[in-house]
Length: 229
Ligand code: PEP
Image 1: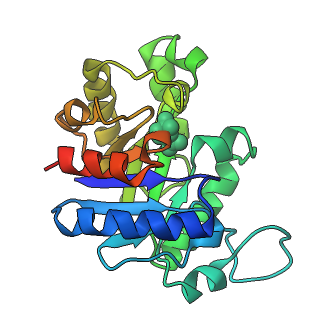
Image 2 (image 1 turned 135 degrees about the vertical axis):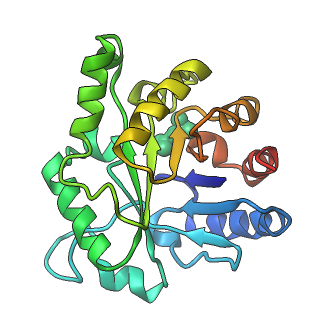
Image 3 (image 1 turned 90 degrees about the horizontal axis):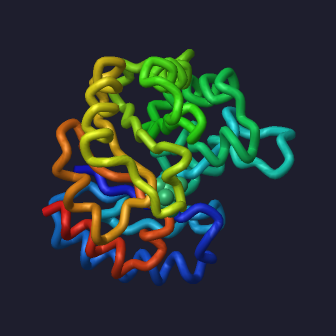
């Protein structure tokens, strides 16, 4: 199982170092693969058994892109894993599918492990299954679904940070449809908590979870890692 934490714009560098310290002993006792995506200021918070990934980067080595970081910054910290297509970047930061595909190809060329997010908003979820799948499949446009270093995360937008999750049957159904598009490991994300993670991880075609708010405390995240054993 792949158990990943997206810390978003939370935890300062000092707090992240403490978090990683606490998490390390938990991860050492676990056979799961653990990935943490800290804020940019904490990209140096690596521990031997935890993969540290970038939440975002601009698809260039370096240059005039104010406020962004590029490949050179990631390389300095030994970062070889990146999150692309997260719903907050699509919907809040306004990243287009075209730009997301450009990022994908840039970091693919660099051999990065890519955790690629797809997910539908509530209005789409409430339409027909065909429309929902068409919406999700549109998020695969321009992406190499056969890339060997690809992990996909299905994260319904309406489930992120809301405490709402699809039924386990719905997760199984959508994951089986998404597996037809790509055989890459497929994570579920969206309001994964200590009390639902075990059930979610048992759903067919769920190869792990991507966790946001419930992963902000090392002990909570550790319980989720243990639930996967
Ligand atoms: C996320 O944003 O990737 C996420 C899954 O958030 P949360 O767990 O808070 O719903």
